[in-house]
Length: 330
Ligand code: NCD
Image 1 (cartoon, rainbow, N blue to C red):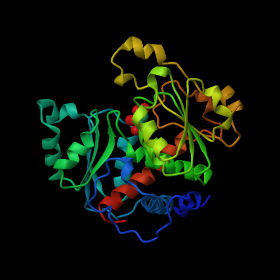
Image 2 (tube, rainbow, N blue to C red):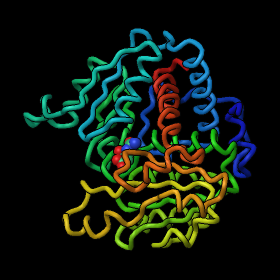
Image 3 (cartoon, protein in one colour):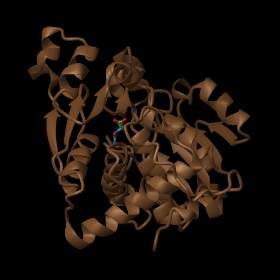
Image 4 (cartoon, rainbow, N blue to C red):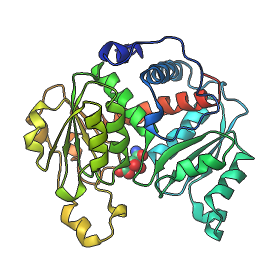
């Protein structure tokens, strides 16, 4: 399928397409998904698509030659961290990777603002993952270089939401009119918080399926209500499986629970198996931000509807686009 950012516009009634973009990404932070308009999405996805084709054709570019990314991760990461590194390197830039903050001065008690001030004197852009909600905004307050939020506690994960939406477009060529079901840990999962906000720009229906104690935060539901988004809540996937176009599965976020007993009471709540898919639409798209810890059986991996590995790859192109845009080079 040939992707075009214009697809978004064709699928939404909410905003007219404005082909002129004022380039206001240059030097900007990426902190919350709420900062993006539909025009921004069209622009980002068009740049990502261009990079996807270029990587396929030539492997790497020199667009960000001489530029340095500081990749600062206070929480574990495989995909987000390495895809930002891959993105920077594919664009010809280099990376200061700080994955193990315990080996950095953070373990000596250095504050986040001081660590940010340090890294920005060596790098041109900072990607930050941190366990506290609001940490990216705090870092941005002190930074003179762009800060990109790669996950702030249970808050947001905006670059993941962008790659999730890009995946939906790649897989289904539209967004509006779709029914999206989010399953699993909707309370602590930051990816679903950002994705639900992003989807509210479109004409979609969202179903939330979770254990009672892991429901989507009420303020987020109210926020989407205010935007006219139809939402339903369930504990049982069967209630909505048959109508679902996109099934977005998430991991129960063990590290966010205050008690092990509470985690154990919900840890195996849902498992997607070939039987689940047998009852789903033939063109349903099965997504997961990964890592999975048992909520999608490996037997499902070869089903063409399983999109989670493709979803990972799309993340590199989205992150290439974001790096190039904030550095004013797209
Ligand atoms: C997610 C995260 O860190 O929020 N992972 C990711 O970035 N792909 C999801 C998770 O940890 O469950």
